[in-house]
Length: 561
Image (cartoon, rainbow, N blue to C red; front, top):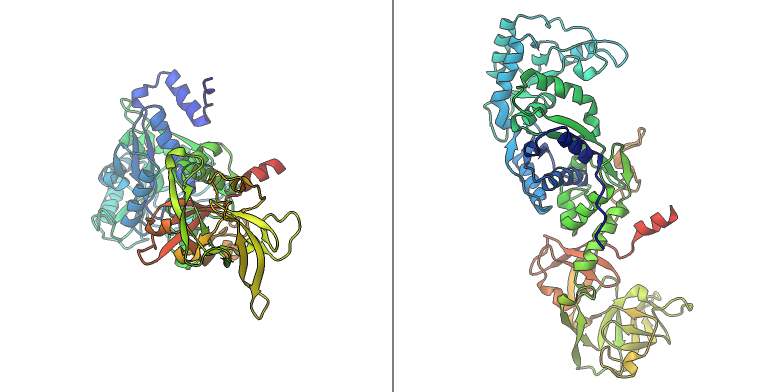
């Protein structure tokens, strides 16, 4: 039975309508236009998937364009990180572009607007301009410099370009309508003076174009057919079109801006400014800290491209913003890792078990499946000996009938090994259990085919042989913020909601097959969750990040709703 065709999102409906009206499919072109002033986050992932997904759907080119018009905040480090993230997600761009590629063309057009009486140099202070801009309910007033002559404007603008003035002394403004109901149309700034070195053009320019002037004209230069932005740019669409009208040639494609809603993720923030503050204040250890919602942070934590794309596909493209529970993202990574991650054993809160009737000098290597969900994953050998570690919470001296783990007088099966019975335990002076003494049934070995090996007991525990165990640093993560929406409180700073226990570093003991693990390897520690080898690992010290637990909290939330 064939799958039902997937329904179109509203952006795809817009494109389909344009094609039906005669827009040539061969002229479809899209772009992903990040500003290189920080690392990409999960919100950008949706935009990446949207734009590159449209490119794949319509077999159309997609440009990667860096909107690099602010040398104060932009760095090559961010350019490199963005390219890595897009490639890691599995997408290929048609051409790599930069807004700075168009600085000369943008400048030439700006002079053309001056000559046409549609732009002027304003010499007011920023405070004066703010005062004469008006309010949403009151029209603005014209700048005293609005009627400068074309000649004077050109002279001043060229002097601005040549570095003859200090920052803040002049700006170039479009001459539109100071009484417009859309305040963005009230003579917006096109250029400001910045005596800062640019990451690509160095000190070639002393003036830099503003975003609204640059963005639409860059789309036009690249002949982008559909310029897709987040919802906060909806009021900018009128200005986007006005700027395009000043340079539009009927023989070319006029880009169409359309907006979609941001998808905010619970228990985090996605503002680059706020993410930067987390980094600078030392709350996290860099942009790629596994607690961060950045793509590099998710990658380091063990999230996969498939899981992120599946998440983006599930939440879809909408016209209204909403808050997505982070457990939905965890659901998608858990679903993917369940299919691909090898199963191994690790003990993170160990207590020693001594199997008193197992020969002291003996050891054996037991066969264990790598992934029951994937026959092609094969199997491995796991060492077993007289002394093993189990999880501390897998043992109680006394417990009720619903406790199916190890208790005095009770039996459990050790995964891939034997059935053991707890006979006694040793305590320290404070009453803490330090060791458990057990016996084992030598005929109960898993897979041996004996009648005893088929005997059923209710509990199965993971374990690690003490003398073969590999010590590792395990980093266990919790929500970065205690509040599900930390940046929406008007009377509180979002930093007040930082979770002080978002990172717990512990020492774990792992089976020896993990000794050769490489950075980025992902495994399931049976009964505990999915873990990924961190770049801090070395030959001398293994470091694992917990990616996600085994429990599906999202499904439980859905059932409650």
